[in-house]
Length: 130
Image (cartoon, rainbow, N blue to C red; front, top):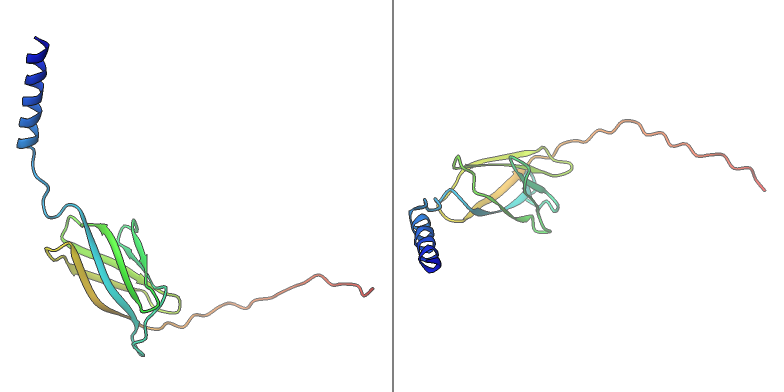
């Protein structure tokens, strides 16, 4: 009797697995690649930070400006990425997904931005001569 219940349980489990909906192409991870460069000089921007719209995953550009970001495949079928680097205006990448699991964005150009700092006053304690 225990064997019959066990066998019935296995058959039911297999039926549930067989009838379960399969993962769609919108599920899973995708690899996003690209290169970040200065818009004026076309020189690579080392250390540029690339984040997805939810800021759940991020990547940094290497010395050649190249980055690889592994992230969840968006349900809406579009990527919304933010690209930032010190001294540059933020860049936004909004592009449709391809069917592959690898998305190559090509070259992303960032415009230089002037950084203005407020005055900095440095105080140090005075020392008495010995």
